Image 1 (cartoon, rainbow, N blue to C red):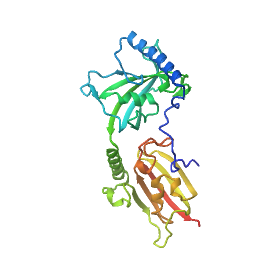
Image 2: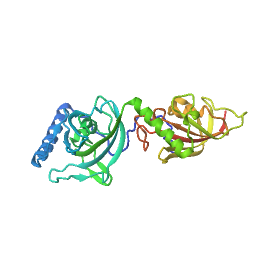
Image 3: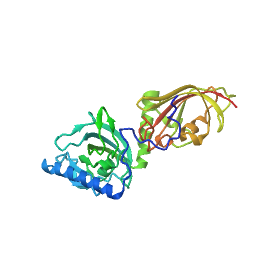
Image 4: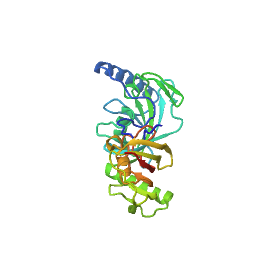
Length: 314
């Protein structure tokens, strides 16, 4: 039984490939960056491609200079926001103008871009986006140290060697501050409740906590025992995303309810339930896996739990 969905996990950005760069001495880093930078700029200049450079050495090529949405020289102000992006990766090859596709189709992800240029699954992605202009679609040329470093492996059937320069086409589809992100998720939860549960007024199902909804589908007896912190309980459960994807489930699962060992919304929800009760619980990401996500659960994903409390074993 996986049960990864409710355990408190401290890592796990979205799984999109290899881990990012390794630790090197400052001299080694400078050597890697200089070598890769020379190769990238030689390629771009040989092919008459205009580019600009971040302070860390990621080269940015504008892909949509004619679009009305693109405002050259105006900072996108993406740092400090939750971003929805599309991206497609390629292996850099100096003798191949188009490179070697890693992602046959554009991939999507959501992440928080910090003021320190971190948040994406590789530093070069975050660094490049920080310096993108308003409305810009760009291709980032990322030195190997800011990509996958000395790691090697296979992504989507494509062999990625050590010290590979990565090209990445990137489009920022939306940017939201953290307050707006909470409203954005609440709106999507309410829409799901309307479309899938036939509930027009979601607010009447709010628990006395911010943005957690509980819809009882089978009530317990009035005299039934209520779940409390520290109880040893048995539950049936299914964990889903708003798109209907089931990411875990279990029958007759037994465990001690110690809220410090679980994502916050799981413990809160269970402590409102009684033996024999079945409920659908919907919660925003800040009561789930938040900005990090977990395994196949992307960052900022609202969660749905279908739970039946079977018994309390004390």
